[in-house]
Length: 139
Image (cartoon, rainbow, N blue to C red; front, side):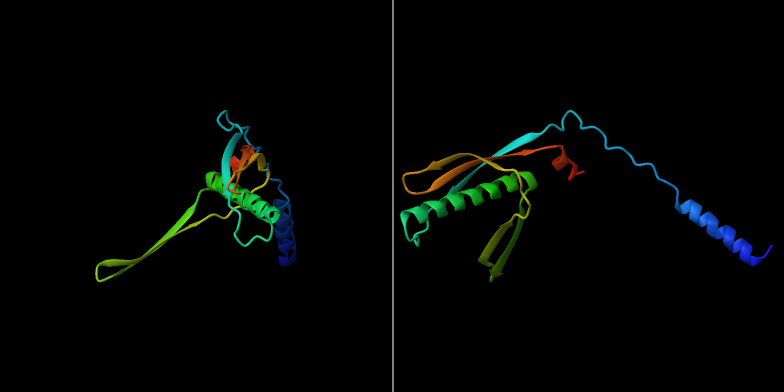
């Protein structure tokens, strides 16, 4: 047999092996404990002293309360990353810094209640339902 014929047969085998279809495993159905859960959080916002008018102060306080509510929901769903550093000189603590960081994407949160307090601050109640798809992200 010639080398050309052997290479053609080897190439044909490689092509046929490369066309093999791998069966796809189906996603298992959700287990009983994988039911959707709803988490709730409260956000608070205070009016800034630099507001031009009472209407602007109210809107800014509402926005701050909403963002605080989102942050609290994310903390419950994903957790918080804490980093800290301390400076010691002559066996005395000089500086102690603790930072909390939350980074996530949130979609589908609903505002269930908004309360305007007498001091101008605002409290917002929010909820978010976490379904089966959310649980799949964490094996």
